[in-house]
Length: 182
Ligand code: HEM
Image 1 (cartoon, rainbow, N blue to C red):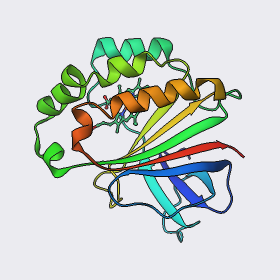
Image 2: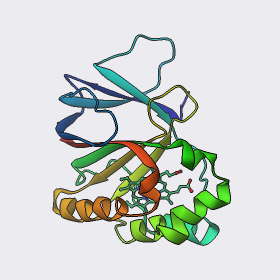
Image 3: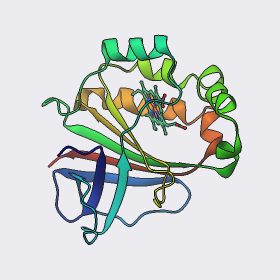
């Protein structure tokens, strides 16, 4: 059976080697040396030092034209050349979640240009968004990116630029974990 729910298991071994873990905002996480991404196994003991669980879902904000642009250029995860990765767990504030969907979309795109900016970095950066709000997790999203070493600087530029936006004023916890294929 296939699943859309995955465990990001941080510990002492795994497919990805952690090269840095930075607390951008909010409470820090315990440092680990490796990470594995595994299909979620319900009712099993936590593996590793910590486990973050998230599920893939339908889009919330992307409009038809944006989706078409994304589909036309985006690359799949797992490219052999993409030996660098980033796991950036993010939680947004109560003020964000108290807003109506259309107000959130306005901040996300009209004011912060999240998709428009992100599209400039495709296809070099492959991405997947996992949701984890309302399932008892410490974050609202687990964001995952894969790219080749030669695109590291561009990824840095993208992350830096998103963090200056109005959307990011609503991010109250963010951990930036950089990895390389072990
Ligand atoms: C690589 C280029 C990127 C593109 C093309 C992109 C595109 C998108 C799109 C289209 C969505 C909306 C999905 C929906 O409609 O539900 C989204 C959501 C999100 N992205 Fe990005 N993104 C990129 C990079 C990033 C980066 C670098 C971060 C983190 C530093 C990030 C964090 C998020 C978060 C947290 C959400 C969920 C926002 C919410 O629902 O409140 N994205 N992204």
